[in-house]
Length: 144
Image (cartoon, rainbow, N blue to C red):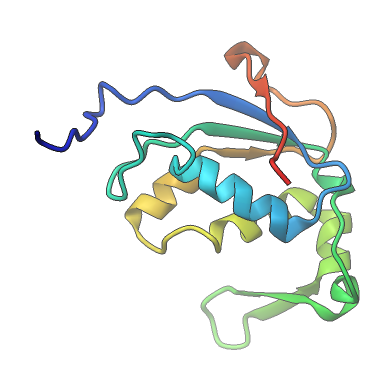
């Protein structure tokens, strides 16, 4: 018996809709990263992108535990000398809540071309509306 490796033609991707209302950022991001990689499927292969598309809504209603709103900082660099910028989690959650979730999920994926292709299947929206109704995403409840 040989091991079956799925071909790109065999890979079936679903669209899942996740409501982030009241969820903790890190716990939700780890589950979303597993779905994006395809670890919840029996056909998971580490060197292939077999995961599903994920549409996250209500990103502005996530919560952070402890003092992370004021003590956690995100750093960005333009690449130029003196181009370092920082933003607290409270500021990022108020201005760009989609970016907060995207950063958390991206940092839980591999730092490789496969990880960069995987994070492109994540679609995050601040409010309850999204523009992926045509794909008919199935509501998905995170298992925790």
